[in-house]
Length: 245
Image 1 (cartoon, rainbow, N blue to C red):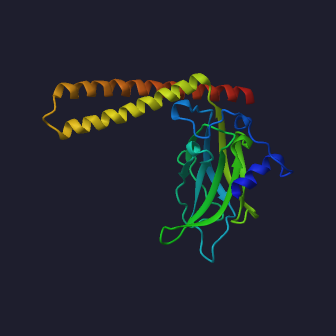
Image 2 (tube, helix red, strand yellow):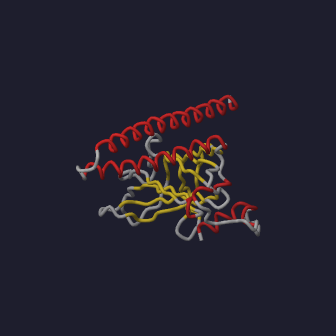
């Protein structure tokens, strides 16, 4: 229901929302193989603070926020902030710690969802409020996010303060992401093989040395790819800052 409300907010809840063009083709596959999936954009979210959160009973809330991207099966991921003790009026989170970057394959079907919980004395989460928005309706920048109750009704004055950064992934960047993913998978395989060599002493040490050499080479290559991705991200931010100056 929350995602339905969010979807129809694209046109101001004035009527029918057309299916994405990709879903109207005969070749559309809702579950493409991993080799055919492409990251189309990244979404970075920083949870900075909240205000006037609702209370359950007379207790003082100890809130935390769950940030979730939901949509196609391969676009589902979550992030949870730390708990702010005894402050439901104006809790604040450190931007450097409460930051997450989501890789999004299909923005047309993806939604960004904020769910605010409070942690009780038994460390169990209790629902307080939520907000859900379609990914393609989100713009970069600082945003005040109005919160709703469990019936999707507005909660007066309750909101989150967040920072969002939407960044399309170019084809060359997609190749970098793909190379990083392949190297990480290979590193996991090598790590498992090395573990087997360590637990079976009678296996030849020459093969183990070859695996260690490949592991170290891949680790260096992975670091180079990561540095290249970070450098392109910094260049993109400098370009944006020049535009706004």
